[in-house]
Structure formats: structure tokens, C-alpha cells
Length: 142
Image (cartoon, rainbow, N blue to C red):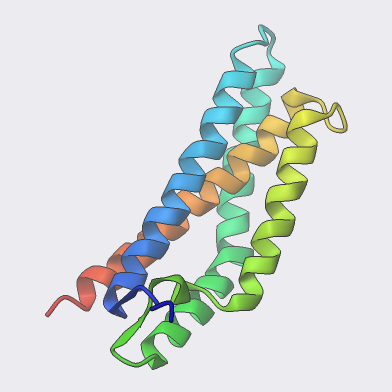
């Protein structure tokens, strides 16, 4: 029988924070690499739009998800599977989002200049949101 990798539920906050931060850094690194290929004033506008989008995505999108995840984690028993940092249904959404990202990166469906704004927005939102997970990790230190 395969045993689940169990950890104290407090560690789920750290895993979530690290994962959200890591993906945020990854998305922003894609965007920066793309933007360095352009030499016109549209680059600054794309960056500003991405930063503003990141704040909006954080406030009206990710904060709701994080709040639900934190409430769910707090209701878990002390030792749980390390993959329980998000509900199993969320893994389906993550797979869909990853597939869409790969599709957009590997095709010219959206030009890279504009795609960089989207990646900056989501990446910044993930980075900002990950701070909430880190806060809960350190708050639950015993």
C-alpha cells in the first residue's frame, strides 16, 4: 500500500506560498525575457498595465481563492497529505490554466508584447498573494 506524504497542516501554508511565489517568478521571467526583445515605448505601457492588472487580479480574484484555501486548511486534522494545500478540484483548474499558458506561449495566438502584460499581471498577483500564505505559516508556528 502506498503511503501518503503526511505533514502537519501548518506546512501546507508554506507549500502554498512557495508554489504561488515560484509560479509568479516564472511568469514574470517569461514576460521580462519577451519584453527585452522590443525596443519601443509600448514596453513601458505593457509593464504598467501588467502591474495594475496584478493588483486587480489579487484583490478581486486571488484573495477569494486564498481565503477559501486558508479556511479549508484550518479545518483539516493536524497531519494531512502534503498535496492537500488546495482542494482536488483546483488541480483541474491548474491543469487547464497551464495548458492555456503553454498554448499561448507556443503559438502566435496573442502577440508576445501583449501576452507579457497578462503574464506580469498574473505573476505579480501570485507573488502578492503568496505573502498571505507565508503570514499564516508564521502565525501558526508553535
